[in-house]
Image (cartoon, rainbow over all chains, first blue to last red; front, top):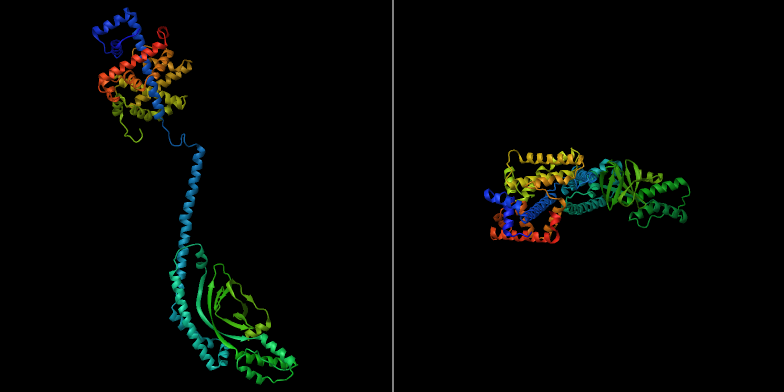
Length: 357
Length: 188
């Protein structure tokens, strides 16, 4: 049954149809007569066929493994996964669009507003001084009360006040320059924190000087009570040299029990005290408009920010060490308020009378 | 295959003739979608389409190796018609309750010799026991139909004679291991 190398070559040549003529005839005759040769050939045929089958299977496996065609979304992506990915994509696209087309333009707009407001805030100190001095000159002519106060003011004191004011203005000018530098040095970045600053619109920014009349009502009352108790009218101890004049006008040891006398004395004393305590103090008033039409004020040092009050008829007076602001003949209490506070109306008729008259 | 240049029909046939298996994979991929659609529309499944297309590709491979393949139409048309015929035969055999795998044996035998499936299975078992080099050289010679000088080039043998000697050695080894396990009556 076993066959040698020559047999293998012969069988291969026959299977590949390479035998012809006499060689082919001899081979086929031998297959018929020689049983051993025939068995060997059949075994060879079987093995060759087995090798072919094996090769075919290997090739099929190769095509199965490497020829696998995966279309997008066929196997890797289930329908749910595709839907989820589409939803996620849409969410991200929406967020991107929101940032790109809504938030960023808004920030740009706010930054622009901020720049505009900063530009508006720029001062020309020389013009400011001129305007303020001009206002000082014009101011007494504007109201009768100011005229009266100015008339009552001793000339020397008034001149001193003007000198002091000029010094104060120079100091203020320097301060404004420093503020201006700080403002210019501030980076113009837009942020949400800027919104509150830029959204509040400043209407006017003028330094106005008011003459404040200190009418110390309590002291007056105290002295009146003391006068009642002791039978002697006394002026407050912190009054200046004019106290002597007042003392002269009010007769000592005079009992003033009837109301007319008291009123007269009170009016007299008030007039004297008022004349004696006229002190001019400068306040800077800034008129602001808030985006929500808020009405109120903030007081920091001698600087007052008024929100929602656009009137030019504004006076500041002091009574019993309390400050009052009079806007269009309405009296409001003025207390220290660094942040925004609403203006509180004064309802005490006596105080209102004293301040308005 | 991915990233390599796509071959046209003539180039594909030439490459297959030289035993380039990547060319056959390209042929398979090129015809995958059309065959899949056809089989799915004709009572078949994706597995059936793949199986039929694999068989069609092997027909192309065998015909090319035997020198019987003459390209008269588009290669895809030929592959599709072979696949279609194979699928229709399968459908006929399925309707007659005949075993599907039997139909391939006729094609595979050059001399119309058919062997028992069991006998062939035994031979394949024996082939698997051979070394990788032996399996390759026997497959190149008997399945791919390559000549000994080509096989020598592919497998880095010095020359055709060396390759031929190696082929004899491997075939003898297969014969002996088969005869050691099976009796003459088992396969004849």
